[in-house]
Image (cartoon, rainbow, N blue to C red):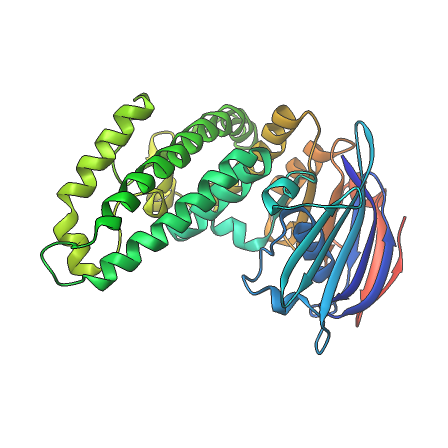
Length: 372
């Protein structure tokens, strides 16, 4: 899978931009705040229909313009696939092969990407919210069903929280809809949790040997998904639903006191262990970075296994954050296998043949020179 061309209209600082890319490595070079990360972000948005940098789509539209548009020609194993995403105050319109999609969940997954940015180095030591977002974005790319279940869960969580807020401080919820929402909430929550467990098994399968290689055979990585409810991974759907029902019932007084739902996948987390020790608590910065790198490289292999093609890799200003050894391991892994986009202020100091063979784009004040 690779992107052959990209067109931007009224996107961030670009009024109009058209680029053609190499199937292998594409390097965007420029000083900070010149627009290279905007190009990288646009590829991510073309894939995921949302930005990794902001939740406000209005920020993606060029100042004083009514709309922004991203178009890309993607080549997959069965041929060319034009993708188009239009952003406006009215929302998003997505097209696949020139046909408008009724739901974004039908659009996401047409172009698979793995993004590795400096903030991803904080995946291990950052907040649980960062790790949940990592889970949701990656599973959503390979499973439209998960996206649907997640959106259903989030809607029901909002409705349930609304009723809890209305009855905050009371001894009970005097609303027949609360029980209806709770039953539906449990079904959606269990669907999300089960899919997360399945994904984590696959991620563990790929991440463990990758980490072992990067650590020169000295470290064994274990990745665990920890539901706040304490659900057993091997339980049936019905057993999980019953268990969650009991947890919610037992915590009802506390939920009413605080006015929010306290048990469910919106509060779950991941844990990472190296040689049995919690990396978040006891790991060195090097171990934390190796863990993050291992997870990103595992994502590439996992997506390749699930969809039958390698995803596009986006390395946003991350090479300078890695030491020479980890940098070389990353570049050796992707060499010739994965279409890769790299943003950097300079290629000086990156001594690797992958970079010397790359298509180079120079970005300055929203203008781009060079390329494939």
